[in-house]
Image 1: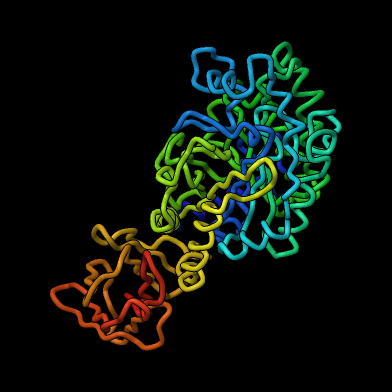
Image 2 (image 1 turned 45 degrees about the horizontal axis):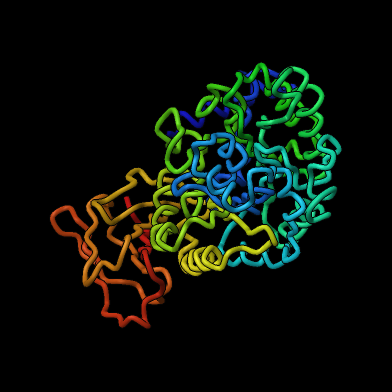
Length: 445
């Protein structure tokens, strides 16, 4: 892995020795992903827009695809729509009902901080084309002209940054029913998409751009290389901005910045520490809020914490999504999950933030590893009982073992090539946390 990183750094220094990146993938791909991203590990994704009004999808589907799915008259979404709103009610008629009157960006930012997140990514525009900022390229189809009559993106950006978090935006390249896109893609890109994208960047200077909706056309049609060259060379966020890999048909896991997976899918290769990557998913099966989901469709905090551990242990980040309601509330069940993750990170964040994969990622079914400097973290996915047996580490004679969240060093012995850590008896109220337990090993060969 170190050799790979060294080669990438050498290529990068050559490609950018004149201080500029060229509008081609060879040059753009040589730009290192800014270090803050790989150190952050945990971010919050937010899918919020007009689709939060109907807030409905068949179980297992994404509710933010409501407008798309209601086009199929045999689809459950269309049947729900007719029954609930009537056949003459258009998707556009939802916009005035997207009011966000309960939206409190400071409260949202407080929840994100308490969750232990280090960055936030808001859907500035999804595939329906509705913008959460006063985009001059989407007249009367943005949150200032209609609905909330408020710059939702701007208000959240300020609140998030005031709390010390990085702020970024999801941006859909295509728009399902934009008449220009449907008749003249080249004109759409030149006269609508590029000006709109640059307006978003110039207004808010995002730390992250999560592109999406790229799959209809190759990157040449989207002029992605040209856009990214501008972003890296000219934009006000050029030194800090991180981008993903969704910039054209066939670019995922190949071009752009960090690679992406989605509910563990849509990757063209096995994700590893050889290249920065991120898993993004919802707490339930949908990104946007789906009223059709019940408690059983939401992952418990234990499963989400274990997912974070698994992803970080393989060198990735977790971008965990929430879907606020149309009036601007984060559903309580989502708040509860985020705050429980935050409680775990408050004790064990040392084993997550700014770590790197160790030479072994697993040790049996229950143990995962991360590392930092001269420390190895053995993370047990559940209470180990009276002893924790580790086969992967080789101890030095002066190795010190401790359990994060407790004060005293633990006794250990090395027998038959295995480290056996003695766990002192603890009552339920004495445990440092729940769901997973981190053993800090200092002095591993």
